[in-house]
Image (cartoon, rainbow, N blue to C red):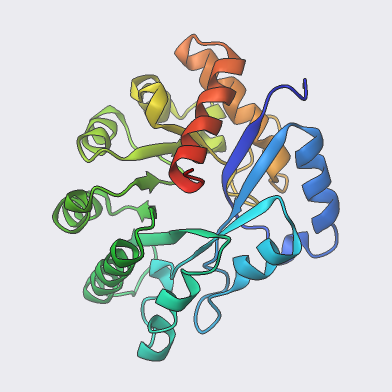
Length: 263
């Protein structure tokens, strides 16, 4: 790839133990592929540790960080841990709250605890004037309803990470003024609903990510994902939308900068 083309991986889990033996090399490969920023997601292994991404962002200049509690940790998010979040959001490399949201795929995490955690973290993000990054799995209707009730009126950005919805959900996301981020799933031949969504999202609402080490794009299915692979997601989006790869790269980079690195 030409170094004139810049990409941003807007969602990666570089704190994962799968990167313990080659984290620097992974970052170097991303830079060589044209990736100019990576957003390290700070949910880590869950409470009480909230600083997984901050530790990496302090070590690597190219990384930015988030702070947040994933819904799968709703039962272990005690008051002491929650009360630490506002101070951590003041860290100079923390640009968003996330990933937060709802996950009904795994049981038995009660919905009431997930909802309460989601709402409280939205309130913290509002107070800190930070964007939120949303995880939703098998929970779209409730996620949409809670965002509509508790977030839309803030006027602050919302990023739907690793979007897996179809056209109807994409239209609802745009109704809420969300940014929509596509991961490697958009490269999968059978992900036709995601393909249709990718065609619908306006260029100024589009983001790309890897969610590494998860969800590797074609041609890396079955292998560990990493930020360098975001180029394959960008190329597939360009093909689906009938647009130039360079346009997708420039737009998604500009969108991320506007969201997370405002002047």
